[in-house]
Image (cartoon, rainbow, N blue to C red; front, side, top):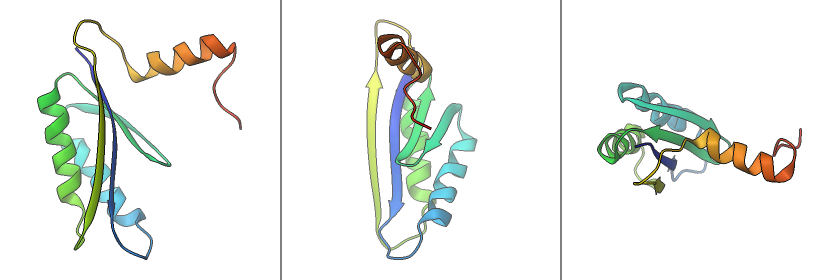
Length: 102
C-alpha cells in the first residue's frame, strides 16, 4: 500500500520561514519515504501510515520556533495501489497535456 500526503510545516514568524522549512524537509531524510517539495508544502509517499506519521512528526519537531503550524492531508487508498505521479498522470490524460503552465 502507498500512502500519499501533503505536509505543510511552518514556524509562525514574520521573517523568512525558508530556513526552518528546510529543517523540516531535511528531517524526512531519516525515514523510508519519498517526497517532493513545492511552493505550498511537501508531498510525501510512504508504505505505511506509521512511517508517514513518524516522518510528519519529525518534520514538525525539527522546526525551532515558539509556535509551529502543521497541516497534514492524507490519501490512504487501502484496496489499491497508486502513487502521487499516478494522480498527476490521470489529470494530464484528462487534459490531453501536462498540467503545467510554464
